[in-house]
Image (cartoon, rainbow, N blue to C red; front, side):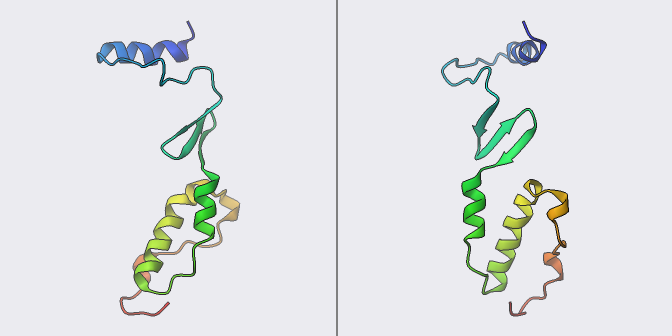
Length: 99
């Protein structure tokens, strides 16, 4: 058996975990898990999540700006390094300032 299959199966056996064949994906190049596409290359974002992020209206309050920046921070791992223009530090935004 392939080492990449054998090691996880042995770990499951060691910890008395069972694997549901109906819920398992074997021999697939990519699978969707928790809203991401997981492959041998790593994580990829779901395009519909990025689409909803680009369709957001411009934030009109400090709270909505911080929420927007948090979303950008989360999805920044899926943006290639040469596409980053500048980091935004939400701690530099003063309370009571207008957006």
